[in-house]
Image (cartoon, rainbow, N blue to C red; front, top):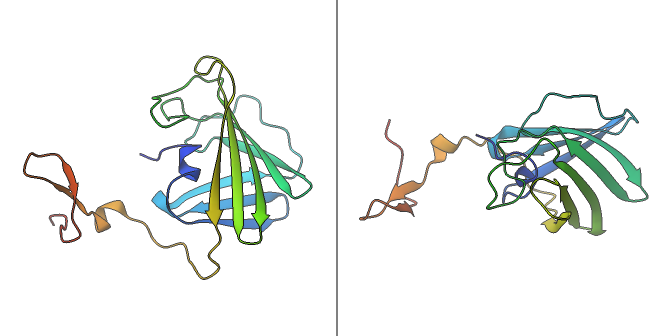
Amino acid sequence: MPPGLPASMQWPYPIEFLFTPGRVTILIESDHLVRRIYTDGRPMPKDPDATYQGTSTGHWEGDTLVVETEAILSSTSPLEGIAGHSAKLRITERIRLVQPDLLAITTTRVDPEVFVEPYTTTFYYQRHRDWQIMEYVCEQNNHDALNAQGKPAFSLSHAPEK
């Protein structure tokens, strides 16, 4: 299952931003995830269906894309180590280049049923102009293995059974 927002933006896989009129689309290599951030001025829809990536609207404040997201499936984790959240979860991301090839995404989570105050983290992403989003199929490239005690391990030679 996909991790949901905000975890999908913090995985160690490439992400790509596509800027088109009225929308920013983010392609995430892991699980072929796609996010659509509507920047055409539309308001957040009333009672949107909950999804893994939620519903996102955004606007520009100078060189910073400010993204508001809600309607994220409550079974997802708002923060590593926390299982689930309420329907009141709201995510605000501030996305901007802090250096020519360094992107910062500052993410604030607000959920009065989970957090006593807003919780904010910042992740940095190095731009690699020669990278491409690749096809990601977990089972096809499964390097998971078990050690002698039956606990998860990692092996470059392990291949899934056909």
